[in-house]
Image 1 (cartoon, rainbow, N blue to C red):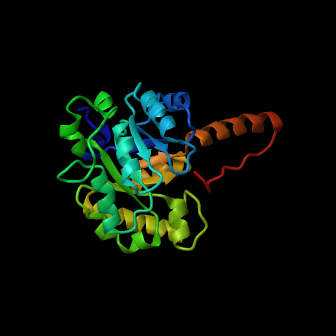
Image 2: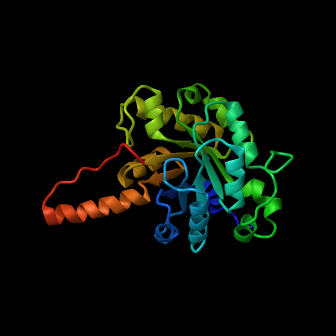
Image 3: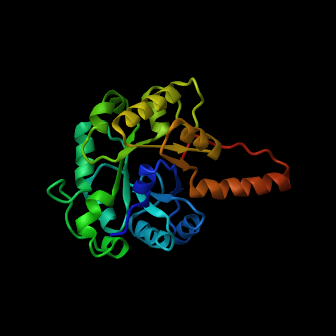
Length: 263
């Protein structure tokens, strides 16, 4: 089976730079994947991507060495299994708040006896290889999103879940969970920043992946320096809009403000 390069990078202590795809287009996914990202995540939660879109985007990413990940829209076994069958090599699962939810997520990614994933990797076999069934449990990356007030109370329970590879911080929902305004790139000293450090500390204790979503490369670099293993920078639609705004600001002499409140 094709090795999951992200897991090897984690073992080697190399930071993973992740791209984010929200536009339902195989061509834009292909363009992004060709830019040199270690991985690209197709966002089926807040992006405007449905299953047929995601399948085409996975095929486009496969033209490169970029590892394809998916953020599902909920901790729902059927959706998780189906997108894994399509060839996703990792799942980011939102709103995981306790040990039971973490177990349900992880087990949906694993074949029996470790989990309850149903067998039928129709495209997984094409992308991963004919021995997919024998090695998928070890190669598929499983990241639980920490972004609720309950999750903050259950960090050790969640992070000690067997076969969970790591956690991923959604700063906007995390901010809302602790009574702050939603946004990314939270400044030092803010309540959200303090919780980010707390989550990172727990992830290091449990020796699992720690990932986080960022608005700018400068902030992502700071997160790498703090010890995060995976950092996401912006998103396809943000790069498109920011590039357009930059050109227009030069031509129309209009200052453009970077928006850090949404994906």
